[in-house]
Length: 360
Image 1 (cartoon, rainbow, N blue to C red):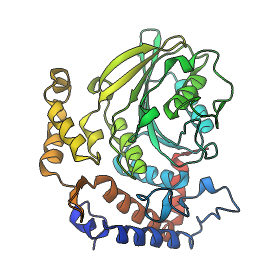
Image 2 (cartoon, rainbow, N blue to C red):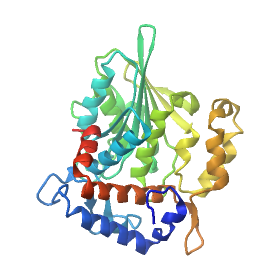
Image 3 (spheres, rainbow, N blue to C red):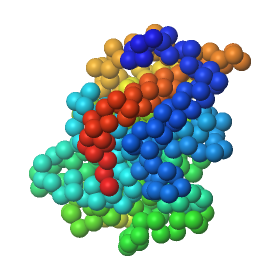
Image 4 (cartoon, one colour):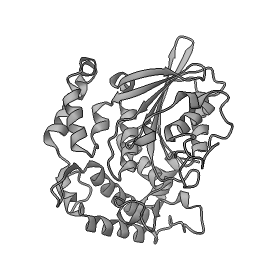
């Protein structure tokens, strides 16, 4: 089988739970034999390309194997190279994310950039900067006369429960010097609020007007945050009209000067491609062309819409008769297979790809 193909049929035999577990074990066992292996008990395990949790914290994570920051950087480096993307980065820590944002926002030239980040809410029992959940942060800087505006999009495939909202009053000045202040205490901040802390700390003193766009649209129902983060970053960087194609509501001022929060209610079509729930997909499909304001800006996406929603290319039915969109699962299989083959056969190239995107 040619695993480089995009065809669902080529990967369909691997979509049973038994095959997924076997694939994950194979990837991890092969990874242990490469020069990239990091002993999770002896070394800085967060820099490992792959992590193995025992027991798995979720029935949807086959054998508890998933990518950590170096693994995400390897995949991001390949995606950046293949899709000719610009500023795509993977932040090893939230502190590294802060420094990277400031560096970019200090530049005078307008730019677009995207980071894969691993935030957490304050009540999480895991250590700070534990790279479990991944999401995308996209930033665009523009000039309106003498005014510099920074638009930031927080794109999470799994915004559930308290992660669905940002409470502006929690982000009043002066912000804590330590962006993790209150971590370990339940309900001090959620993941998007932590990223807002990071963002406001990064742009402090830069005389910037900031517009924060938070997306509570759920697309992920089970494992798949790695793929959502990478594809969100790709689509954001490719779409210069992102901020005119989204639909928003509830614009609210932050207590911090010159900062406004917007809630995204509808994403551009491309970002919905991996949505795992068919019910959510169908509702989005129904809504898409019933909104004139969306219809005007999405005319260039009609071909994408037709190809995905009509062909239903990645729709699969499991043994219980439940149907779902397997886009993220197929991509995860494809990406992990490519990554382990690169680490085995082209370690120098793999290291260069990691170094090209990982922000430490």
